[in-house]
Image 1 (tube, rainbow, N blue to C red):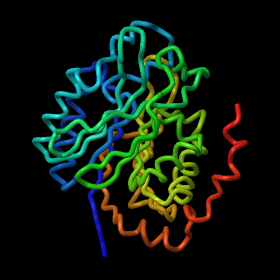
Image 2: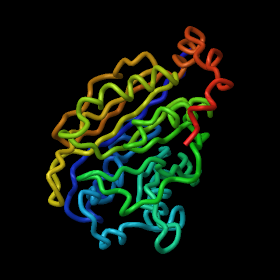
Image 3: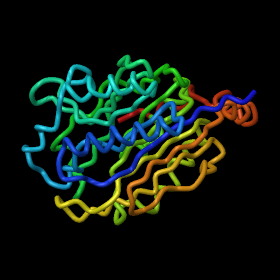
Image 4: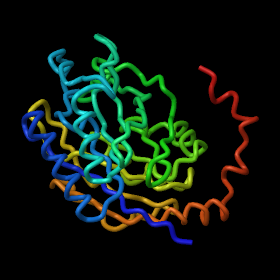
Length: 280
């Protein structure tokens, strides 16, 4: 039987200040809900620039507590108003000096369900993330939401297959991958890795990337956000590589059982043989 949910992702450019960036995302959530969306994810570090292009402790001020900070509270109220599950990629301060790249997950009734902390932290030119974030330490949670089982993997994480698999084994039906990824570095991977991971782990993926060149550096964020199904087929068109765009798509979660019954990847995996893969 069909089990269709309507999902949304949103790509946009840096507006120049935090409050207007928050307002842009609030309006995007309203627009998505007006189109019938039931779940929505924003881009990585959604209310700021991608400040990891530089190493400047002034940007520590963008971090706040999750779930007790003002942004989560603000979007809990919005989720409740719109009856919309929200995934909020944020800069988290656990305590002074202990900072994470995190996504908070809010259910459609405004309930805070938990967080995912980015595990894999790059440190290369234009992506100086170890200056800002500790590696995630909270596993790969799968959140039981009003629309189904949701997982999150963040940007650089996508190059590592282990987390994708952990989310599949945890029962994820949709995994969101909010990103800030640049044309010059990883463009050739963008439409390879997530479709391949959707196939290998037999779920839908929503891949979100910001757009534009920000005044902190020359990283050219190329958008092209999309949903992909467990047969590596894009669901509708891929978004623009330059413009702000709201992507709303219908995902039939019944397809997951069909694909899993066909391939049986989880049945045929060999965890008894994989021990050496976890050796340092």
